[in-house]
Amino acid sequence: MNGELGIRREHALRAAVEHGLVGEREPVVGLLDITGIEESATSLHAAFATPGVMITHTFAVKAASLVPVLALLGECGLGAEVASPGELALARAAGIPADRIVLDSPAKTVAELREALALGIALNADNPEELARIDALRAGAEGSGSPVGLRVNPQIGAGSIGAMSTATATSKFGVALRDPGAEEWVLRAYAERPWLNRLHTHTGSQGVPLELMAAGVKAAYELAERINAAARRQQVTVLDIGGGLPVNFGSDDTTPSFADYADLLRAEVPGLFDGRYGLVTEFGRSLLAKNGTVLARVEYAKSAGGRPIAVTHAGAQVATRTVFVPDAWPLRVLALDAKGQEKSGDPVVQDVAGPCCFAGDLVATGRPLPLLEAGDHVALLDTGAYYFSNHFAYNSLPRPAVHGYAVRADGTVEFAPVRTAQSEAELIAESGGALPPLRRGN
Image (cartoon, rainbow, N blue to C red; front, side, top):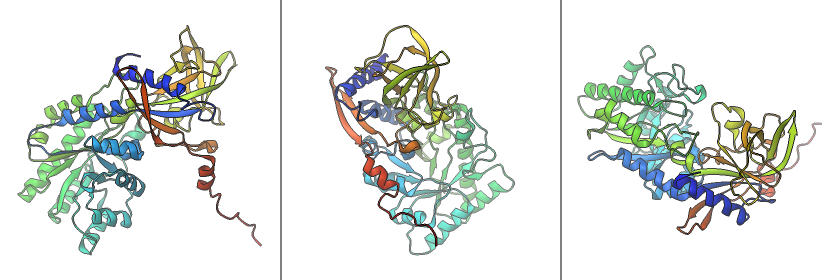
């Protein structure tokens, strides 16, 4: 481990073991680097800052649905992109003001739309039927103070992970611009609604190269220009260019960076930064991934077929994507000793398994690491985004605690609770424990 990020993580891993944050009672825990999160937010602001351009950076709540994290990002000047009533409730609980919240979802209910309009939250309509619902609500007493836009799919193609690609020919998101008659419908929709003043696209995600992301933004920009030309005024005033900057999971290097992407956009879509449009971004994974670590205890060391296997408490319940789609979501694994310090020794090819009761619950297969033993620990790196918010409750395994950490100049570590571990009582209650038993029929 090297660099400031790695040094802070090294201190935090050792301190987490020393402080008992991970152990017999809590065999797996999440750790978040507070300084790293602040640095990521600062780099985002700096990359896009342009004189005369109003920019609102929002954080995709699905990437880390943790109120203290959202509140920290709010203090760093970010808003929230939400895609469900639950995510909206979390953003509001974190104190994110309505004018820094954007509601995106392909399945908004009338109740969700009504609430957003009443609160003055920006909306991006996903399809013609949703836009008709907004028409009806605005015509009533539900309010009309929310900025409203339309999400479009430029249909520019897929990245290397099909399930994460949102701009394919058949993507479920937005109005498919290359379908017959689609662009003509979009132009009519704006002509008939002078209050429709935003345009939204989201073409990036893990596995999508920057060039494809920029092409999607360029298509949306050019469509906004055509809408405004047809209206003979600046009807579209804000372009929401989404997020989706991919993350390098192979090292501590932050590549690509926010500056890489912003510079490419300035080169490919210069009109985006000339002051005629306000901009909204919706980054998630790229802000948090490198600032988080899953730390778990090795419960047993065994072998099968000559292959050593370390059975740990970090598996599909916290690393769902990695376990089920390992080629698309590989994680770096650090082998740590009983004190939380990185192990030395010759690498031995071994599997790192989780606690779930199915054979494929492996976070690393055939990985060369110093040989792990019972009582050691493993650290799953780059897990600050999604790994703490997409819990998979297989075998009724509880959600682990999450702690933020800050490292002082002398190397001491201060921890702050972000989420408490789910108790057995909470798990039982969530599973209907307070309800009467089902009765056999007569």
